[in-house]
Length: 171
Image 1 (cartoon, helix red, strand yellow):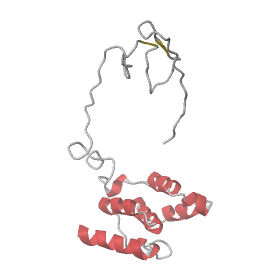
Image 2 (image 1 turned 45 degrees about the horizontal axis):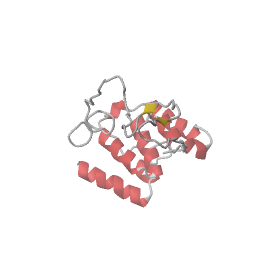
Image 3 (image 1 turned 45 degrees about the vertical axis):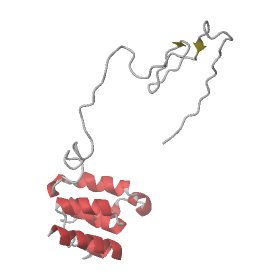
Image 4 (image 1 turned 90 degrees about the vertical axis):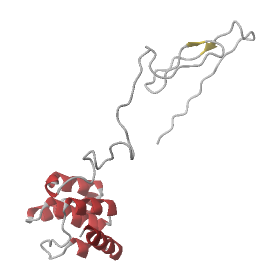
């Protein structure tokens, strides 16, 4: 989160009854101050036209969570496609490491479902939250690529144990 520092000078007269605060005019969508604020009068933050806003959505255990809203964890196997593979490849920085899309294109050119390709990539990165999401969506960790390697073959020992642990819990 970035911080922006600013300085505001307030000029007060010696007689508080007749003095007013003189504030510079601030044009910001985040902060609203009245320009003629009287002595000890509270400044108002928010809409100044008398309107009120009421939030109709809920978060947390009493509201809709990401899974219930269909954002995360509720996708099925067929909800994943080639674009998801490319987005994950870019997001995880694999393009920067590989230098080209050749590895991704090689996997996509095989007869492997995108969700299984994503699992192979996530396993090679040790991305446990993504692995859990993909296994819940129906990804299979025993699908082999052209080299005969599975998601388990691409994973380190800790990630293998994680995948196998999730698969046992699922069964």
